[in-house]
Image (cartoon, rainbow, N blue to C red):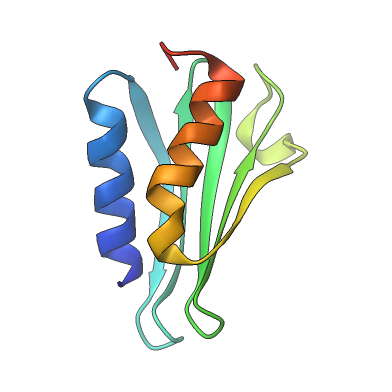
Amino acid sequence: MTFLELKEQFENKLTGNHKFDLLELHFAPYSFGSGIAAYRLKGGILKIIYEGRDNEVQLLISSPHNKYPNCSWATIFTGLPGDFIDSGITTLISLYGQSA
């Protein structure tokens, strides 16, 4: 799975019930396909970091209502891309509630 496929699946999973804004997108196809995407969701900010070399995804969140450049991050998921969509969304819903 590439970073762009991972991003698309994540956004499709959110689109059904959750309103989000894409804040940042960086894709480095020549660096093992690594990438970063940042989103605003319910006043908080989420960041997905995909390390193509290690085939690892991290999902980070900020405290609500922080400005994006000044955020401090907490990691809520680290693992393989195949586990990310279900586990990452499940963790997000448990933190933000069903209407994340």
